[in-house]
Image (cartoon, rainbow, N blue to C red):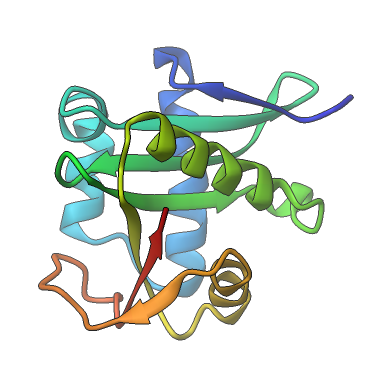
Length: 152
């Protein structure tokens, strides 16, 4: 079945948490700010004007990503995760495309993201989309050591 991108539905909240917890525990650890986002998805991401996207394959959640509103012109792409069994199928591309389309529909001027230089495949993917490294803003995440931006 062809992958399908959908927006947040409460019954997928646990999938968002599980997918993100899996990669965080593999490469880093779950930080207090992660837990705050997981416990308060609606208040932290959705109510301020953001969105969460899910990639479904045969009605199974294969991946997810959040778009958090930073300002009227800036969104942060965060918590991009794809289930290991679906990796290599370019589902991250579909999720990033959804983020870019969303930001453009909101008349955003740029998308920013925080990442880690340990995540070489992720950084390569972001660069493919023309995200450029920029000086780091202050962050709540210990693991973040690179900031990137995409001007729309």
